Amino acid sequence: MAKIRILPDQLASQIAAGEVVERPAAVVKELFENALDADAGRIEVDLQAGGKRRISVVDDGSGMGRDDALLAFDRHATSKISTFDDLDRVRTFGFRGEALASIAAVARVELTTAVDAGDGVRVRIEGGRVRSVEPASHPRGTRIEVASLFFNVPARRKFLKTPATELRHSAAVVQGYALALPTLRIHLRHHDRTLVDVMPAGEGADATRQRVAQVFGTELADQLTAIEPVGTTDGGTIWGFVGGPASGRGRRAFTFVNRRLIRDRGVMATFYRAVRDEWHSEEFPALFLFFDLTPEAVDVNVHPQKSEVRFRDNAVLDRAAAAIRTGLRGSRGEIAAGFAPSGSHPAVPFAWQGSGAGAGERASAVAEGDRLAAAAYQPLDRSPVPLSGRSGEVRPFRLLGQYKGTLVLLEGPDGLYIVDQHVAHERILFERLRRAMRAERTAAQTLLQPIVLELAADEALRLVEHADLLDEIGFELAGMSGHAVALLTTPAGLDAADSERILMRLAGSPWEHDDPRALRAAILDGWAADASCKAAVKMHEPLSAPEMEALVTELFEAEQPYACPHGRPIVMRMTDRDLESRFGRR
Picture 1 (tube, rainbow, N blue to C red):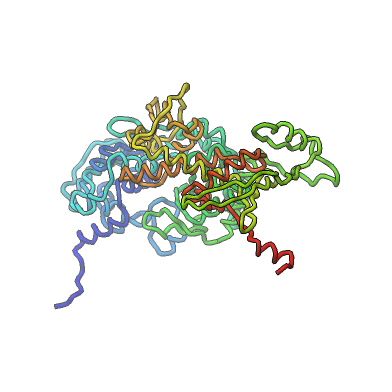
Picture 2 (cartoon, rainbow, N blue to C red):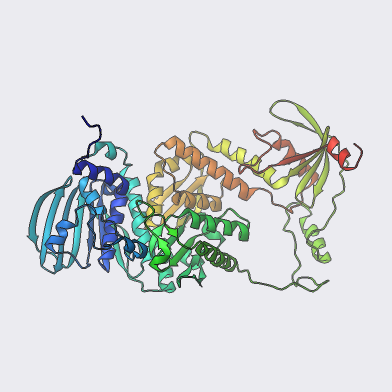
């Protein structure tokens, strides 16, 4: 007997569904895109059990007649393309003709549609089999209901997450299209609770900013700086908005190609590189970037979910990088300036904002000399400082002083040790915070004034999903109207600003945390690394001799005294042999 056989159509459809439909959010995406291609002006999405039990999408688009309503469920049935060449100029969101067939193969589907109000048709399909076709009264447009997703593929259904998690993913899909298409009226409900409700805002950059305010709140919208339009070689345009440094608290980076939300690694790498080069920072601000290109300039047929694209001209990314860089400079209030003539000085002298006794006098001395860096710290005449690591080894060091308010210099038994004071303090605080927060229940402090977090629907859902665990760690949250969440308590030892920053990052985190212990560990390490970096002593901050002694003493008591939580080195050693060699004595 032959070993190779042709699979039955139903089994083939179920296999194909795995590439297109992986969770309820994928169903929402495909149905939403069908509504957009039907020129809908209003789209309503209704979910039950996060979409696992039921998904309903209603639009006021062009609708379908009886024959088209049936044919739409056949594999590779589409009105969007007819020849291979059409793939090079796709103008619609959908085009493969796979979505409805794939969804119908693994769910119970009911489609009601009408081209003319009142004269419609209803089609019921279960597991890929047509159960009934009948006339139905319906307004112009389409209503499609998907129930019991993966009811006939239990192996796939068991991989679905909790209703709260699946709901959050669906909300993110709807929000993405709300940002891309400010002309639409969009409504998302879950068990009669409204999660997204945005009114048409019009067209253009101002309308897009208004839509950002509708989704994320006015605080973020007010922080945005326009990315001025940049032309491409094919006649397209790249434009958008970028946030200021404060907007980096959440992970809000959205890229749209011809209004299609994508997750393209090349575009994001371009953005990250621009931030690092312009800001010298790992704090990435909010980004809303739009590529309005001719269809021939981009290939959208490179990913099953159409979440990635390929630009036919690689120069598009170079132009995007230039536009983003200009926007980043504008978001920090930076403007181009010429070189000052030789011997001239800034109108406002630079001064270090030092801390501790004598900081004011040091800053004044710098201002009087109009110099960016003042100072030569003389070696301190002090007795050796015995530093004992966890191994118990006693290492006698002599404190020499501080170099330009940044590096602590130590004379060791085998050479010169140079300690970066900022990353050393960061490591110390990191280990202090992590030890405190690893307690079974973290001590909390009540805020005198609650902090109100303005969030999008999916971000609020993420925090609510983990509210009990967050309470154990010291965060008490309270829901407010809309998607706002009030922060009532923070972990002891963590200030309000750091607490807000951490929660915003968690709200926008792409990670999935089914294991509470894994979530706790990730949050605690994230807190400690972030909070310690913000609180650590800064560069160009003069320290007294006792402060330097305390710093290096506690550093060498740390579990890992040689690298900060982000991997940067803390201590550099120049051995006696190295120094002698540099002076030609060896």
